[in-house]
Image (cartoon, rainbow, N blue to C red; front, side, top):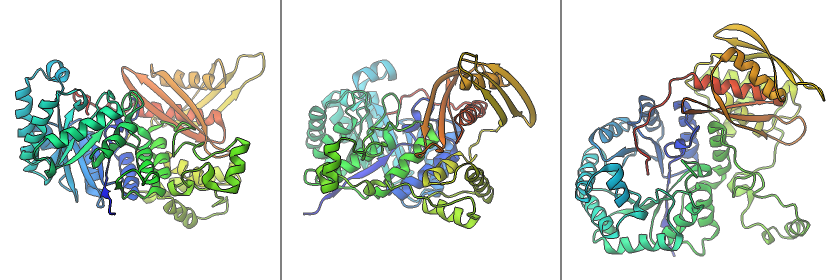
Length: 514
C-alpha cells in the first residue's frame, strides 16, 4: 500500500531565528540552508523579507543558492510585505510566498483592530496578489487553534478559491491538545467544500511541550505538511522538532500513513551546525540528537543491547547521523587532506581565504591536541569568521591566576581596532576576572545573561566550547569560542559576543509571526 508524502517545511531560518539571541548573519543562514538541502527538506523558509535590509538579502541569497528545495519568504497579508517577498525570491528555483493574518477573536480585536469581514477581505486580496508573482502560495490563519471554527472555514474556503495551494493552521501560542487539535484539522478539511484543492499544514509551538504531539496528531487526521525546526528552535518554548517528527514517522511506519524524503543521516550534522551557529546547546537528554540519546548506563540495558540491539533501541544511531569519534587527521596532515575531510563532513568554504583560516586553526589545535576528531573540525568550521560583524576586539594573550584562599586575577592583552592594550582585574573566579579585564577596555555596558561550557569530544585534552549571551539596550547576542583551555575559550566567546554587539541591530516589524 503506497503512502502519502509528508512535506517537511523547515522554518529554522525564520521562526527559529526569532529565539532571543539566535540572530544569524547572511553567511550563517546560507550554511544552514545548504545543510537543509543535504537533509532534503521540501521547503526552506528563509526569512521575513520585509523585516530589514539584512533579512531581505539573506532570503535573496538563499533563494539564489538553493536549487533542490522550495524557498519561502514569510509576508504579512499586506501589499508591501508581499512585494518585498516576491522581489527577494526572484532567483529561486521553486519560490513560495507564505502570507498570513490572524483569525482568532483576541488577535483580530486587540492586535489587528479589524472586523472579521475586513480580515477575510484582506486575506483574499493578499493571496491574489501573491499568486500574481508565484505559482506556489501558502496562507496561514494565525492563532488558528483559538479561532472561531465557522469563521476559520470561511477564510480557508475563500483563500483556496483565490489560489492558495497550502493552508496552514498554526497553533501559534501552543494552546492545542493533541486529540482536540487533530480533530479540529480533520473537521475543517471535511467542512470546507474545496479542501481537496489544497494541502493542509500545521505549525505548532511548544509552550505546553505538545508541539510534536500536536503535529503528529494532525498528520493522523489528514495534514500533509508539517512546519518545524532543527532542535525545536523557536521563539518562547520553541517549535515542533524536525528530527522528532521525522523519526517518529519513520519508526512508527505501522501507524503513520505517510513518509518523508528526509535523508536521516544528515540529522545530527544539521543539529550540530544549528547549535554551533546559534549558540544554543542541545540538552544531553534531547530525543534523537542529544548526547545521551543512544547511551545506555544501566547494567540490564547494557546486557540487553549486547545480546540484541532492539531490546532497548528502537532506532539505529547511525541512521540519524551518529558515528563513533574517528581519528581522521594529525599535526602532519596537509591542506588537501584537511579540505577533503571538511568536504566529507559537508562543510564548504566560500573563499580560499576562509579555507586557509580553517587550516591554520587546525594546525594550531593539532599542536595542542594529539587526536583530532570530526567534532573538532566542525567546531573549527563554525568559528571561522564568515559573519558580517567587524572584529574590533581580538584576544592576543591572557594570564589567569587562581590560588586557594586568594582572589583570582587575570591580565588580558587585546587588539582593539588594531591597537594592543593590556588590562588587569580581579574577580570571583578566573573567568569572571578575565571578563572584567576585557570590560575595562570594551566598556560595553552589556549584561551577561548566560555562560555555558560543553566538551566537544571526550578526554582531558578535549576542546571546551563556551557560549555566552549578552544583553544591552534590549538587544541580545550570543558569542562562541573554543579552545583546549577553558579560560581562553571563555575569553574568545566573550569577545565574539562583543564584536557581534558592535554591529548594527536588526529591526523587525511589529508582529509575532505564526
